[in-house]
Image 1 (cartoon, rainbow, N blue to C red):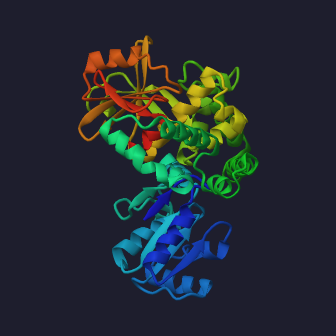
Image 2: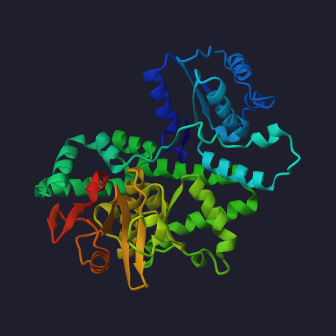
Image 3: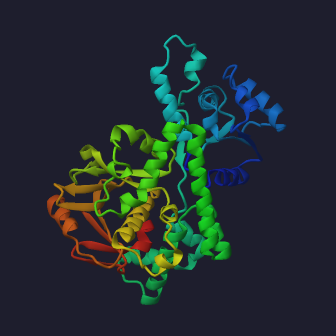
Length: 427
């Protein structure tokens, strides 16, 4: 298995928990700045030799079937990635999970290098950067969703939310208000495990913000470790522009706001780096709402959201009090709500798009659930005027229509009303 995910989302913790529950022992091989471990894979990719040398270097016995071999920060050893293919073909009795905060970045870089590689290079060099296609199970770990946040902070309210979502019956006013309060708390805290832990233990916004600032610093330091100075400047410029991009009335991602001379050709690689690192999510526009949506993607228009809404407000330096009192400009409120909804849908296994009609109407999200196209409009408050939604419904007649807002549960005129705190129920 190859486990993807941004730094600090909890990959290592989850893998160790899985190992503890299912194996007699786990052998950790962390390749970050560990030259002796990396050199184990230089000679050849023979599983028997690799196992023998890893046992010597780690001082642990690797037993077939009962030991989990954990390759962490595997992006720092490309040949270790390829070795998984040979374990699958020649030694399936050894169980391996590999993970890396920048695994997606590394694989993308190696792919580009391979495309330009000298055809006369020896086989080991060529294979050293190859992805083990069909030999691994890929998995992505996301930040804690709002559902997982509730499991930590207030699990008692979850059953009421789920029941009201399924029945379309309004939640009692006190519980509805409490759920909205928890939603706004999540907008500040977000789903990065360290930030959630700080809030759970101390209930202090200052400790949460300190944890978020530390994570953002780690993201910036990653660009310094794995990129040239020129690439680093472009990546950080794109990343720093996201709060502004989401506060605009037109939230389509544009390069011009990054700088007066910014062009897509110059900064697009920076955006792709952030996507591959799992730090941002790109949501494409579709020109039509017919099934399948992927057939109608407009590759030139898209929106970009941060992986975690808590990190978004940290970059914007929005205070806990302003979020809890909802005392924010309309564009800022809308950007936070959209980012939150996008991240929830992605973590739920959905692949959202947005729809636009000749610049006259724009629907926030369109997804496929099973064989059905689902129209979703997101609002940061209880203003539910829906000109764009109505136009989409009239034109494409989707079976399911959802309006997300601060309004209570309900169903009227073919539209399902879902409060912002219940997006996790959309699956």
